[in-house]
Length: 550
Image (tube, rainbow, N blue to C red; front, side):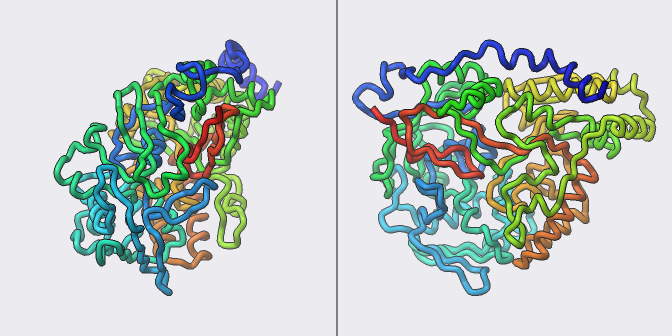
């Protein structure tokens, strides 16, 4: 009898509930008003945001629980249109110098903030320098490091005046980069690059905490925020592209429990649901239900392993934990949404210097081998002077944010480790923001991690484990890795860039700084009377241009 069969048998209790208690979706559900629109004929798109935002200030946001909202209430120099194409947003046009270093953006005429103030080039200069201000301590400041002088200012080694972004006049913004960056235009459509109103921010430090004082420049504006309960957006009639916005508003509940959110969708209270229980995805997929969409996503699901906690400081122990996980079983029997068992940290969908899959050029760096895992684990424990009994008395746990999917994956991994390695690992679920805060503080042993790319380049993943990254929750610190990443950012020679990034990925997988589980897809459900949902692989489904039929 094979070990894989034994593990599959052991997982029966974990998986048995997946196919129970899941009724067929109703196509005839109505919203609380009795139809698909609110009273008065207004088109209000309803959904669930799954987690309470930590901040609705673009500079302080750090995840999809915030970005899905920010992408509807703010807009950068570039944006994604109704077809999912990158197009000018607040910028009417732009020019790039022959050396690829200097970008000159022209701000559109007539664009305003939701309070009526004009959006100016000075707002962008102020915003980007504010996000880099060391005193603000923005987690995502490093994504601005492509700008000349940005890293030096953020790290306290340079001045604000040395950051090479300057408003030449009210309508003209000039930006000079450290090195030519092919994806810089796409970066300006990312939320850390979204502008904030200089006058509002300087007059009220708490401007982003209250809908009464929240000022934005996008297709919608924030009008209500019941913390941990509901967020309401209203169409911004002064938005320059308002004639293309069909919705009058967006209402988002804040419910962490996937099953509760699914019940509300099934009951007709939601028009779209992104965080769908795995059991539901499996059923809808089997039924070829037209409500189910599975988008390609640039992202990786992984486990952080805290190297400050003995014996996880030992690379052999981390390698053993990885080798004992059957990722194929997880994707086939638990997630069931077309996810791909991880072959490294960089997912499919990103191109190399020849326009081919970057992933194919690196090959698979993840191996499932329970026998070798057991050998490595025993060697690693011995090197740390720890016995199996001492390990099992250590009360180690997998930390994950509240979600039925995360729970089932953790239960499966827990059982695989018990079967292959003889170890007992506990489980602990907390709210998403609590998980993020504990990871930042190093208050965990093993934690569920995941990253959706910010732009279409392998660097969007590999940059996570640069030693100074705010999202380097395992505190990976490897001088050679840092050197490869720095060299990749400092050149526009794609051959050098890609080869360095291939070496960097192999390096981090040899160290097994994190344990990749699978490459994401984005399963989501949409009612059949809703149109205009577009999908970009580095974003949640775009609801900005959605429409609701009678």
